[in-house]
Every structure is written in C-alpha cells, then in structure tokens.
Length: 330
Ligand SMILES: [Zn+2]
Image (tube, rainbow, N blue to C red; front, side, top):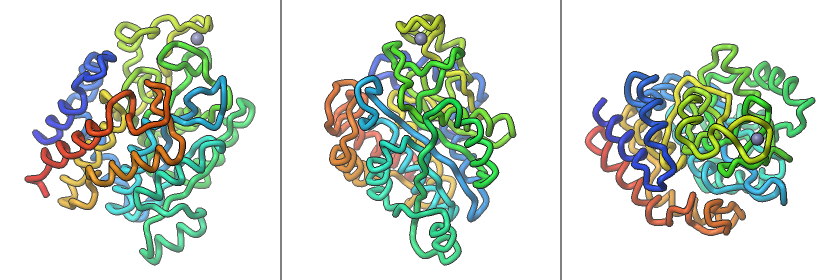
C-alpha cells in the first residue's frame, strides 16, 4: 500500500551515508514492492498462539570481550516481539549469546515482555495471562551449532524466524565487522539456524543496514559492489564482509532499529491496532534500558543513547514519523 511505501522511503534515507540506498533499491526490485509491507505481512500471517524465533545484534568488540553487545538491534527486536505477542499471542523465543542474555533480558522487559521458560510461556499463553518472552542461549562452537539447529527447529516448530542487525558469516565462514575485521570469536552461530530454516521453507524476515547482516545474502552482488570491504575484507580470508545467509523478506534501513520501528507501524496499520506501534515514549525507555544494560553505540565506541552514531532524538523522531504515516489507518 501507499503507507508501506512511505515507511520504506522514511527509513531508507541514507542519513549515515553508509550506502543503504543501493541495497534498498536492489531489495525492492527483488521483492517487487514495498519491503515494509512484505515484512509486516509475514508476522501478521503467524497463526494465533504460534511460535516465532528472533535474533538480533550481537557481540560488538568480540576480540576484546564477549560481554559487550551493541545497541542497534535489541530494541528493534524487542519492539517486534512485543507487537507479535499483542497481535497473535505468540510465543517469542529470542536467541543470543549466553554472555549477553542479561542485556537482552532487560531490553525485552522494558518493551513489556517478562522473560520466562518455555513451559511457563505455554501456561501464560493458554491463560492469556501476561506478555512473555523466552530467552535461549545459542552455541558459539562450530561443532555444536548444526545439531542445535536441527534440535531447536524440531522442538520449537517456529512459524517464522526474524533477524535484525545480526551479523552472518561470509562464504569462508568468517564473521566480519563493517570495517572488514574478523570478529567471530565468542559469537553464537545463529545464522546457521536460519539457513536450516530457509532450507526447510520456514519464512525468514531479516533487517539490516550495512551488508554483513543475516538476510543480505539476498543482495550479495550489491553488497560486493556498493559497500566498503564488500568485495575484500581486511582479515585476509579472501572474501568480503557480505553475509551469505539470505531470507524471504529483506528490510533495509539506515539504522536497523528504524526498520523494526517501521515494521511495527505497518503491523499496527494492518491490525488497526495502535498498541502494536513502537511509540517514541517506549523508544526512550528502551534507549535508557540499553544504556543501563551496557549495550554500546558501536559507531562512537561508547555506551550512550546514540545508536549507530545517530543521536537519541533521531530515534524518537523516526518512531513519531512512522506513527504519523500510519495514523489514518488506526
Ligand atoms: Zn575476511
């Protein structure tokens, strides 16, 4: 719809001059229409009481410490999980590094979702008692992830998988930062689970802003051509930073969190339910929670309430403008 196209345009203004407009055009051409529209249709198609597996942003300075996560990703993933729970009474399972579980736990709780076990989530879902989320650690060892992917898909039977700002490995199995450095150490191999899901035909929606994220495999040629280190990294592995893992629907955005804000808005418009929106007020709470959880603004290398170098008020403004764009549908 026209609303979806406006959301596409808003979040793909290349304010950070990272080259996202090229990736956006490529993704739109492949999608044959609005990215945000397609990305909102998928969660709205999840059956009532279904299960969605989510994963997001990750270890930021892996070569120094596995305990430091970045703040692009978590708030967006939490906003999508919240919208899914409110729209579909979904069981949302968030996969992360074990080292970062406390930070994502605080972030999701601030979005209104109380962390519980799978068993507790089933009771809460049946009772429609309260909004929950389940956090599970994912393996960081190459020998374990394949078996874990098979087991998790068997146990969880997800109706949809959702990834935002989560780095994926390149064709040589190396995880690269946007500067083309290998930072795969201590990193959960969640991208392998998404590959397995895609091979089985389970729908995958992915959000990214750079080219090294899960989902960008869909526009791999454009990452090679238009993104710094897209063709050749700095680590010497012989490849570029582009992730090989693709997706069914790719959402590009100048900042991945903005892509998630826009998806929530497009979901709210479809449901005619303003509660699904990611509001400026909740974004403010989430930015504060992410600071308190020690998630880093990776562009400036400091824990603060800027994300990808964009200051606090730009994130609140994007949430406000998304709300304005869909307001007539609510
Ligand atoms: Zn490399």
